[in-house]
Amino acid sequence: MAHSYVQVTTATDSRAEAAELARSAVAERLAACAQLVGPIASTYWWEGEIESAEEWLVLFKTSADRFDELATLITEGHSYDTPEIIATPVVAGSMDYLAWVTEQTEPGERDEAIAEDDQD
Image (cartoon, one colour):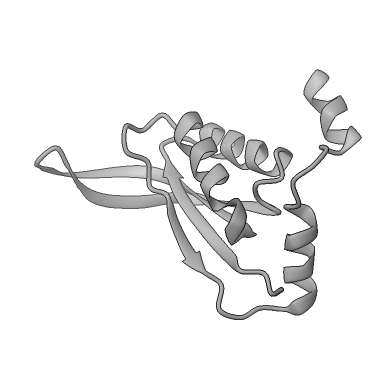
């Protein structure tokens, strides 16, 4: 059975929060990879006003079947009332890379190295 993949994006107001979301998602195997981009300049409507802010973008690479759990992790770990959580389907990609994404996002036991790191 063929796997489906998505790139999930969110934005935060600090590099530290972006890094924590990225690390948590990868540690929980909800994303194979998470990349931080920023700072970026964002302009948006919020509560009837046009706002501008400096933000950090996080790009998560994952399998489509892990999206719901990843969205929950982002929502719970995010400081925004309404965080951006957008999943864009991956329509093509390197077969080797996508196989790696599948392998890294398989539910199951966390790696011992991550478990040990969490204890520090």
